[in-house]
Amino acid sequence: MFKLENNKKLGCYHVGDKTFYGKVEALIEATKTGHFPEWQFNRNIFDKINWEIEPQLSIKELYRMRAQQLRDRYDWIRVEASGGGDSTTAIYSFLKNNIHLNEVVFRYPKTGEKNVHNDPYNTKCENTLSEWEFAAKPLLNWISANYPAVKITMHDYSENMLKGEIDETWVFKSKDYFQPGHAFKHDNVGYIDHQRDADRGKSICVLYGIDKPKMCVRDGKWYVYFMDLQANHSNSVVGDYDNITNEYFYWTPDLPEIVHKQAHIIKNWFMLPQNKFLQYLVRWPNHSIAHRTAYEQMVKPLIYPDYDPATFQTAKPTNSFYNEMDFWFYTNFKETEAFRAWQAGLKLLVDNIDDKFFNHELGNPVGFVGFLSPFYCLGPADYQDTGINNFSKF
Image (cartoon, rainbow, N blue to C red; front, side, top):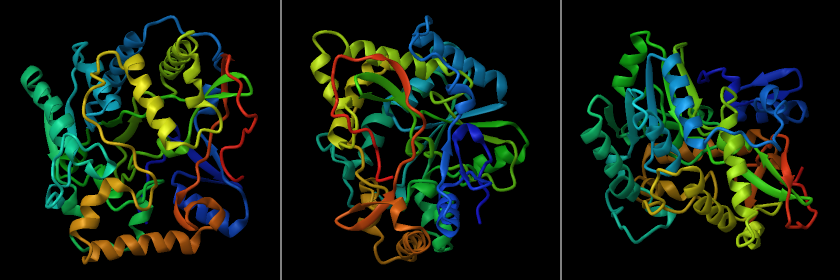
């Protein structure tokens, strides 16, 4: 079994009288005992906020404060970069405010890029590897030229995937993402330099740009909420190390004003007379991937003012098990032990977890259902929804 970081700031599950920091273990326990899981995400902080009152500080000042807060806390800060707006804005919040950032790492399966060509005009999720060439590389080059003290790391995580030393228990390394690459992509000590940093005993922050606010219009009101799918993004396997901490730049109880301010910026924009007709994009229940994609494209310029929204980015994946982001793996490594281990891991999940905890496509399980936080009211909306207010089958 892989040891996950016991970090309640990333969320945890209560099943009966037990607490779990991994979703797989929680759902296996729920299946065995019949106790329904309860997801907890920083309610001790978020429940106490008056969400209807917008914070007065600017969003850029809040970002600066978050960067300084992290700098004051850790010896070494490493940002997991993708080239997208979330992680890029986190990086800018350090560098453009002259707050030192130790390292920026980009994870790329170099071993698996054969037959997967770069195409700047193809934004399908299967072309995700092109984000290296057209989004991440320009960012890293800019950092290298302007902030040479920042360490730039390129990690070929496919090397760890293809060793042939893994079995079906790899699924316990992840929480909600079970395509082949995710459990290996953000391995906290999978890269030798990162293991050496941990061995030196320095306090290490592994920083993720999680995430844009989850927003909806429900029963004639605006709400912001949190979802475990996004909160489970990090790979929080730390093994025997107690000096590695996974942090989320935006979804943090340490500076809740960030997501609070972001939510009001978004609500205010959608409430403008010329934009009210677009509120259907966040009408509850918002299952639509197309609506989610459009919403995220609209809000990025609002909450990430220094990020160029024209930066190349591919579409979001449609499910967890057969995630299009790992098209490179399905294309090049179908007859390998790694491929068989991936399939065996999915079977382990399906065999040991109640079917009600899975999303399905054409009758087949493709990932776990989502668990939600409470809905935090931001104020009235002018758009009336359908009155349906249940996200999942529960």
